[in-house]
Length: 377
Image (cartoon, rainbow, N blue to C red; front, side):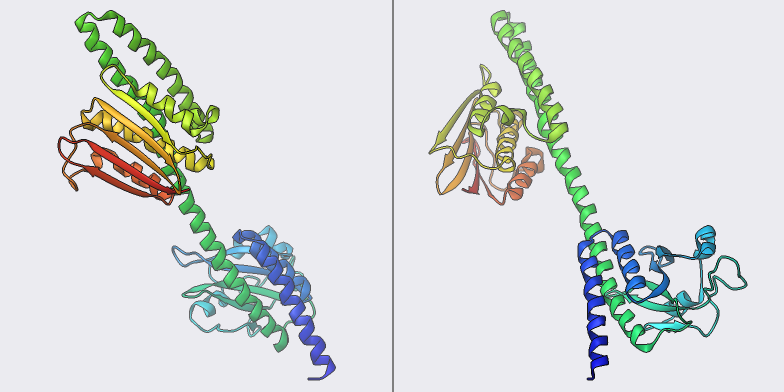
């Protein structure tokens, strides 16, 4: 290799490195295309360029990016839609490498003279994904109608880099959309755990108050109504704040131990006794973990209220080599393996999985139920 060839290779590597850096900085597809096109035109001393991409749904081609387009293409966007010779050649499998499309005049500029800035021919660079055709990058030289073989090979390499970047950007977009779906599901759980659960607790207290009212026990009715009013205010505030930042109101003001103690206390009625215990030394965890534990206990208590026919429940939180949460009741229980989604365990199981924990359930008819959640400490 002589000095000239060495200098040429160094220049090519410098160009590829510069474009690679741009591509690595950009995750969004539009920005990645614009950055690559701009760099390619400038570094290879070209005049203009544009990129066609194949629509993933109907496989038609659309203009995804353009740089330094001549006035006629800027002012008449309809010229950049529909069929053209290079797209046809690409789709029919006749364009496998970077190639000068110079055997015929560009079909989009045929019979046009004003505003073309002399544009008549272009080089086409095919873009291929791992399993399908992605699109085409077209560029025009400022010096001549045809590009040298060396530039075409360099363009083909740039095309490979761009293809990888396009696939990466599309994967990122798909994962972002999946994240939106997951976030919607999380929002649904939060609303269920705040407003819906709160209304359920309020309804239970009002039903209890009604039964005491029918018996003429007005003092107990008054106590329950005071508790219900307090619970209503608390849950309305909890729902508002959950909509704003998806954090439990109790955990904004208290640590997890204090929040659980309050939760058990507010869930207690004259006929439904709640006990809270903590074993070991409380160690504060991140908000996501503490909120998850709080919501699990909240859901478990509501399940007991709805299904267990229990008169007593107990929440025990143990801190040791692991964090162990136990929620016990003295209700009617059920046959192992016979519970259904109606018991509300699906939401609890989802939360335990999000915390990378383990959920165990122990129950027998007439002997109550024990829900156990094990988390890493």
